[in-house]
Amino acid sequence: MIDLHTHTTASDGTLSPRQLVQAAAAVGLSAIAVTDHDTTAGLEEALDEAGPSGVRVVPGVEISIEFRGPRVGGRPGWLHLLAYFLPAGGLLAGKLERLQRWRRERNGLMVEKLRRLGMDITLEQVAALSGGGQVGRPHFARALLEAGYVDNLQQAFDRYLKKGAAAYVDKQRLTIDQALQLVREDGAVAVLAHPFSLGLGDEELSERLARWRWLGLAGMEVEYPEHDSDLRRRLHRLAAHHQLVATGGSDFHGTNKDGIELGRGHDGNISVPDEVLAELERRR
Image (cartoon, rainbow, N blue to C red; front, top):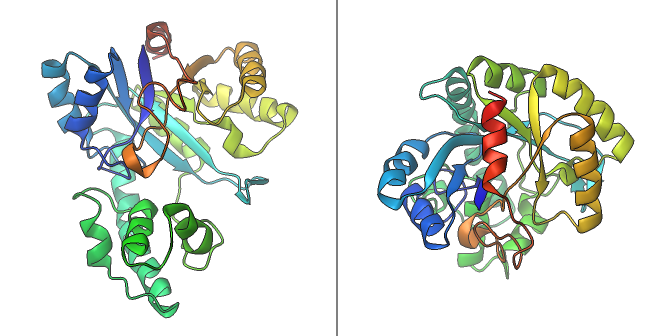
């Protein structure tokens, strides 16, 4: 079994890249894709651990895409794209590094908003919780929790950090056209992450998939912890119709995402066979 959607301390996970690969070996996974948010900074360490651990590591990334969709669970819909088989020093990695510079500015703006709301939080405090990796909203949430301003991590997001909340600052994103072009030019493979988050009905999603497939989309994440059995059936049908690989992953973040097990999702509600990775490789 494999897991094609995982995060490390290079973005907003709680395991280092090395620890993540070791954890994958411990639970018997044959391969994982390391797909941190908008950064490839953890890939070298993860790949170094692949040999000793006996786990294949697929170099990847989860890209935040500019998107305006219906509301999902009280927040605007969001679109993420997973890219696999990234080359070292590729075009996409370079573009993401330039976007990271804006992310760092964004973090400072979020600190300013929190302080104006009466919370004595510093960027240094937040950064200390990132383990030396990319600072993101989960680290802000943990800082607020440790300072006693919220009762739990979800409350931090609901009150201050989710899109539209009091301390939220939007981040710069690629368009899906830009992202798919960069992935294609890098000789990598693009997969639509967690389609539920778009908030689209089947007909509208199908229309978009047709266009994205033409632009180079190779797969769609069907096995995902937040997808119920009915949605999975519909997504499998759409994937087959558009000749997309039906993929899957846990979206593992360690303790930053409660109840998600590496390779298993919520209480074993995902299972991704090795053949999925082989099919993705054939799409390169």
